[in-house]
Length: 329
Ligand SMILES: NC(=O)c1ccc[n+]([C@@H]2O[C@H](COP(=O)([O-])OP(=O)(O)OC[C@H]3O[C@@H](n4cnc5c(N)ncnc54)[C@H](OP(=O)(O)O)[C@@H]3O)[C@@H](O)[C@H]2O)c1
Image (cartoon, rainbow, N blue to C red):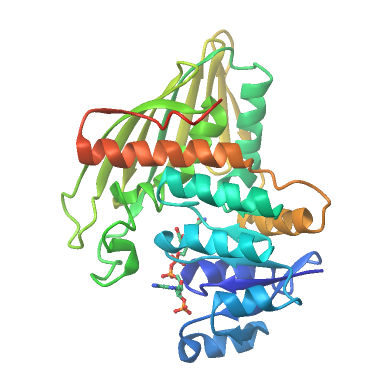
């Protein structure tokens, strides 16, 4: 059994803990790091978690096999580096970091320390996305020309003005850091590293200082392009359609893929509903135990943050922005 400490028992941290606690025979949470013991005390008690005051205390505790970070975006880079310097495995929620320079620094620290560094791109654990990636790899769709993606939702009225997510720098390019980053990760997984980006973002209706309408055109090094939309004040949407010279594949929702060949009948496939939080934490535990590498390669994580930073820069600077040159295919 792999024993973990959760740092940030907020909305998503609780989802992560509850996905495995008393359910998994490979991983469990034993500790919670919290600045607010009075807020988390009762939940920690219910979940059987011992309270620790800060990350340093968890890094010093030899009973803890790995750290899980579900904290504000701007804290990720320094917390990953702290885990690496202590030689402790780390799982970090998306976005990995807010800038490409920080992502390179965090990956370098993790590599130098030889620790497991796992990123919470949980959508990669959906059977439909695993199948989509296989279809690209085995050439079923022919040469990939274009991807069309949308990850939207409705946060209107849910974000208070003092929430960290709307603080300056925490959510560049509207919903891109919270929601769009999942599709951005799928786009780089399927198309490879991004060469340049043209993005547009605006706030039309939200009361808090956060854009609600964001879109980007991303062109990959292979020449395949993608359009990505993330809206923060509309009905929920999670869709990606991939166009190749032999046919298209459309992820209509997390469980449904429709393959349409250029010649022949469309085929709709329905996949099992998977608890992706539990799947990613069990994969993290397997990596700590040395059974298997965590299935989100860090070079692809760097591609994703390079694209994410390019979207943010294009929104601020206007026009087309070249991705950081260091990103190799
Ligand atoms: N993969 C997914 O589908 C998914 C879904 C939602 C969120 N997320 C990610 O999960 C992470 C956490 O998001 P969340 O929605 O759970 O946020 P949240 O509810 O605000 O929780 C964040 C927690 O971080 C701790 N924290 C430490 N330093 C903090 C600071 N300076 N300001 C505010 N909180 C601080 C707080 O716990 P204490 O007060 O106890 O210290 C807080 O409860 C983000 O990276 C987010 O993007 C991922």
